[in-house]
Amino acid sequence: MTAPKRFPDRDEIAAVRTETEPLEDGAGTEATRRVAGRAMARREMGKLVFLDVVDRSGRIQAICDTAVTGDVEVHLGDVVGIVGKPAKSRRGEPSVLAERVEVLSRNTQPLPDTFHGLTDVELRYRKRYLDLLMNEETRDVFVTRARVISTIRRALDEWGFLEVETPVLQPRYGGAFARPFVTHHNELGADLYLRIATELYLKRLIVGGLERVYEIGKDFRNEGVSFKHNPEFTMLEWYEAYADYTDTMARVEQLVERVAREVLGTTGLTFRGHELELAGPWRRVTFVESLQQHELWTRDPDELRARLTERGVDTEADRDWTQLVDHAFSHYVEPGLVAPTIVHDYPVELSPFARPTDDDPTLTERFEYFAGGMELGNAFSEINDAATQQERFEQQSTQVEGERGDQDYVAALSYGMPPTGGLGLGIDRLVMLLTGKETIRDVVLFPALRQV
Image (cartoon, rainbow, N blue to C red; front, side):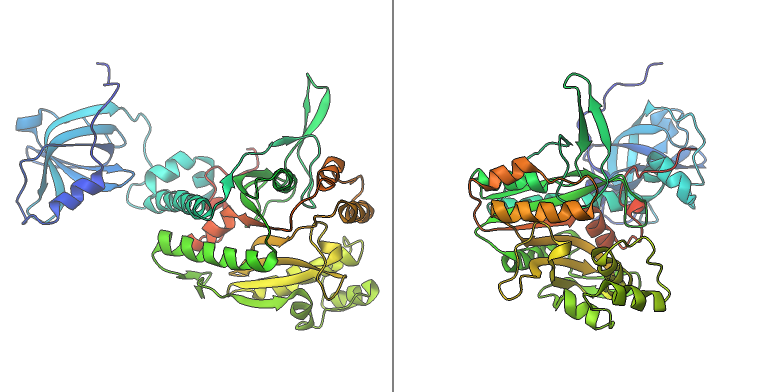
């Protein structure tokens, strides 16, 4: 017998459960409802068959009197449609008194232990469909992720930003220090790169007069995998004309606080055993001060290397002062930034696209923001002078072999770009923070894994 190809006019299980709340134990309604989902448990008591049916919104018990429904040929994992009346069982369990049971899709594989769920971590990542099927907590994480993104979009739209799309395949990659993925376009006869950032294209749009733009999308970096790194990851970037990094600091505080309130209902949360408060204002500290607190601030590369070596830090891979100071910060400062913190005024060597500060040309109007000992994103007042940007690209070429900078971007700046504040926010890491997950693999539906 062919299974039905549709089950129209379906009611969400959560809504049907809500309908049963005012009922007395053992009472029902006269309304007919249609629910559908996966049968995750089956119990029999005489002529009664009890099915636990689960959809995305929740779980409900279907009470099937075989004198009414006929034989209930439902196996664990089958997708079923139930037509019946909302009721409460005599034990007070929200239920549907089934009048008809339809098998919409057969499950032909044994399910993992339905009591303990899917507990094998590696299997959860490799077969995410089973993880979602068996673990309500996993489903909740990805529902939360979707709500985080929709809340961000709503906020930025209300603030007058325009959502745009920029190329994923780029003839030149830029906007960050990172190794790209390379591919080849046969018709064009040219190598192309999966983007490592959306930055340079978005700022071209500021030159073009769009004034406030944002993009939420995938970036790709051909580098390591860790608890906070995946080769492809989701970033929000925005750029706002006539603003600087102080304006951007205020906006990101407002945005993260709003996301927490709307998604979690609170700005307080627990992450890695620490109680965090996401409501602004956040703590602020300069980059120099943060390293001075660890007696690691010096512009002498030999002295900095010696200090790190004395503390047992392997600096063999650090070729120059820029890499040394970045290593010192990530090793000693970042893990201690548990409360939401803005670290600002970075050295110019670490910030190829940020304007210098008014008081010190060796520092830039750049900030990174942290919570739970983890960087969430990066922002700065943008360089909007073509000659200065060209100088920065030339400095960058001495640090990164083969890096020539994006000359078309320099040409775009020569037409004039308004003063601009820009920001990047790691969506995956923000979701980790809001859901209390300690690895990015738990918030990415299909994380990168070694082939087996």
